[in-house]
Image (cartoon, rainbow, N blue to C red):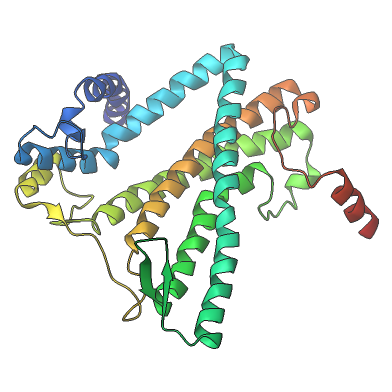
Length: 308
């Protein structure tokens, strides 16, 4: 027990060192990115890529984020304006991303209609899009790409839907308890369920992503030294498989969306925890404060009310 506590608090203390070391030495983990210090030898660029892969799913990175969360929480407990500001920023981010990528649903419908017209009416095997230099792919490629639009909506609109209160929830107990008890349940849910689920999804998704982008394949069990040894032979090996001979061949994009989804859910869990605490402290008057929810407009709302 004592060893676990020493390990825990020593990692929190080291988080400050790791954070500032990464900030002031970006070449060690970012030089592999195009147009960033490309004068650095190729060997060192490959090692930087392996450091980036390692630290993205490492204990060190977790404690940097966790320590920042602790500091922000302590400051917010004494200065509620700061905590409300964090809530507004994180919920605003979720709303902005969600509202933008929700249009992927419309694109999905329009593309499906085009596919049906091209295939059934004009009997063409390919669809070309663009002006001047056109982008031509087989019908099956465009048909399978519809899954990507669906993934955009699911992964990048999830937190937006959460902010809007659009997710299905079973509240047999929740609906029967008092206002402050509900806020307590929300806080516990954010910390015990939402955050750990997002962290586990990130940890698995991060290495799952990179195993389909580079070779030799990195593993979550690899120590930094082992990954640096692999750096000598590392090269890009982007996944280009498809489920049909001429189908959509950019399935690595789904792995990127998985990581983005986990990151956004983690940020939203912080916003939800802070909002639940502030609403618990402020009482019923604070419920929904600064909450930016979509509306259908007065005329549509009145029509819907009449229907019901």
